[in-house]
Image (cartoon, rainbow, N blue to C red; front, side, top):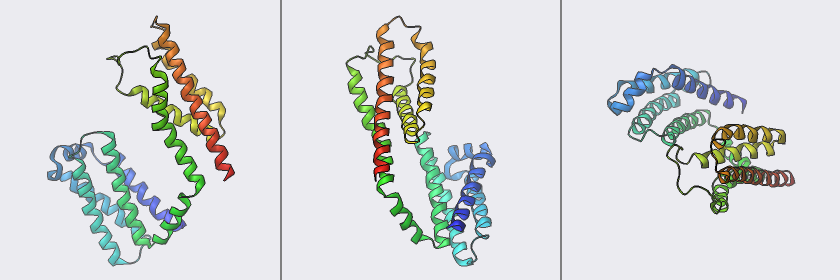
Length: 246
C-alpha cells in the first residue's frame, strides 16, 4: 500500500509540476488555436510520457507492460488535450480535461502495480455509512438548500430583476461556498470559525448596503445570510451526530 501510494503521488506531483509550472504558455495557446495541428500538443504529451516512464522505472521492473503503458499514455494525452481544445473555454471543461488526464495516469499506475484488488477494498470503505453521511450532507446544502432558500426568500425579495452590475448567479455561488465552509466547520467542531465567515461576508456586503437607502434590501440580505448559516449549522449538527452514531 505504501509503495503504491508513493508511486501514484510521485506521478501526480510530476504531472502537476509539468502542467502548471513548466509548460510554456505558447504551447497551451497554440493547442487552443491549432488543435491537433499544434506541435505543442505532441511535445506536451511526450514530456508527460517521459516523466511517467522515468518514475515508473523506479517502481516497475517488467519492461513489456511499461512499454505498453507508455504508448497508451502518449496517445491518451494527445487525444485528451486535442479534444478539449474544441470545447468552450470554461472551467467545467478544463476541470474535466485535468481529471481525465489524472484518471489515465492513475489507471496506468494501478495496472503496472497490479493493485486492482485494492480498488475494491477502497470502494467498500468509501461506501461505508459514515462516508455516505458526509457526502449526503454536502449535496444537501448545495442544490436542495439553494432551491429551498430561494423559494423562502422569494416573497421578501426587493429586486424584480438582477442589476446589470451584478455577476450572473453570483449570489447563488456565494451562498453555496458559504454553506460549504459552515458545514465543514461544524463537522470539524470549529464553531468559532463560523463567526469569522459571517463577519467576513458582512464586511464585504457593508460597502454595498450602506449606499442603498432601501432598508428592505439590507433586511433581505441579512435574512438570507442567517437562513443560509442556520440551515448549514443544523444539517451539520445532524450529520455530525449521525456520523458518530453509526
